[in-house]
Length: 162
Image (cartoon, rainbow, N blue to C red; front, side, top):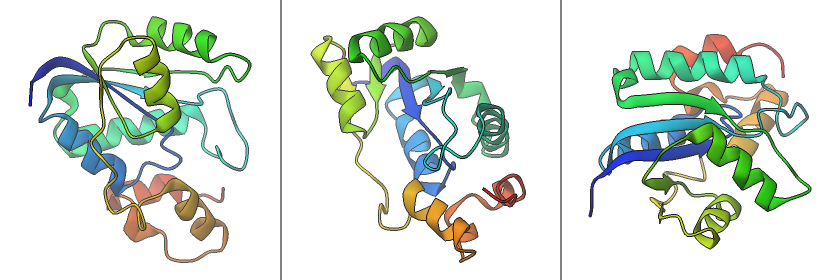
């Protein structure tokens, strides 16, 4: 497979879990550097309980602890523009800057980029039955074991009630 200079990795990270970590590390096999975009940056609701600030803090901690921060070009935030996929893409491209390939698993996002002529690399999900944000948020709300599904050093940031 071709190695790209810069990959764009988009996630909501609600919360950041071991599946995200696996995909970021795997992305670095295909791209020298990554731009990591935090999606739905302007949303706070049941599906998006964590603030942008908290997600940035957790992501920064992950990159530092995993010793991959030097491989991340930048971290950007992308707001939702539910009224228009074209407007969302325009704003996402403004924030992301230059990149060679989108690396992701979200059909909606991947299709928008492909339709606009961008390369998309789908790496597949990692243990999706365990590492899915919706399931982890439900476990948190029900006070069930969710801690094993996120990097252990992020638990302290996520232990606050959501």
